Length: 270
Image (tube, rainbow, N blue to C red; front, side, top):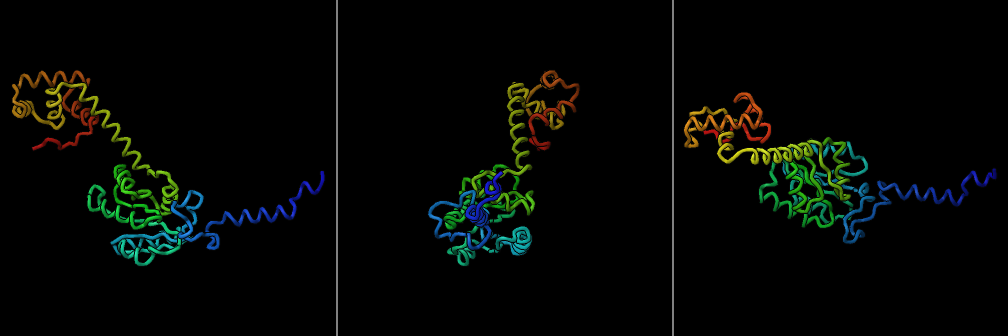
């Protein structure tokens, strides 16, 4: 076989070296200033090129610990902490360095309009800088609300530090990061909703009222008093409930009702 076919030519070697150099996105010489990015946010191929992870958290101790731990996991970029959105804006808001903001809201709830307004304000000020929210809630609703407010993603507390960087890159690239805990919460919520619908169709309105009292352990006399029924009528309703649930006693019926509906144990208790 011809030796020229076995070895790449010198010109091909130069092309290969250039290709290898081009994909080293973490080299400062390869990072383009933010001012040259135009109106679009970083593309998936560029998300490894962030020079700065800006951590915004108004809790000093939590912020310093988070910055120190994240810096150990991210040697190719700087991790800088800020006590407020205005602090970030004053220090780095106009920087040409490629940034991503990690805004840790802690235990604040995104159900609070003030928290949502603050988040929308941050997104507006950040402009082309991606914003990822870290929060204490693992509910899917929190993630959806964050996205509705304009954030690029939401990371719950169950995510470990080595995974935060990858989760950040995923969300900025346009993917939706959903933790295992959030996924299970969504699954349970969907299952309970479906089961509750089945229960609503299984019983009449009066039987449903008796079932709600039954599952919290109320006696027949108490149920009769609360629903303004005769005790004998309550017994008939309970017998029908047992039959539909295929339960043999009150304890089993209450357990099945709780499992099917997800009703809290203390619901409707005086």
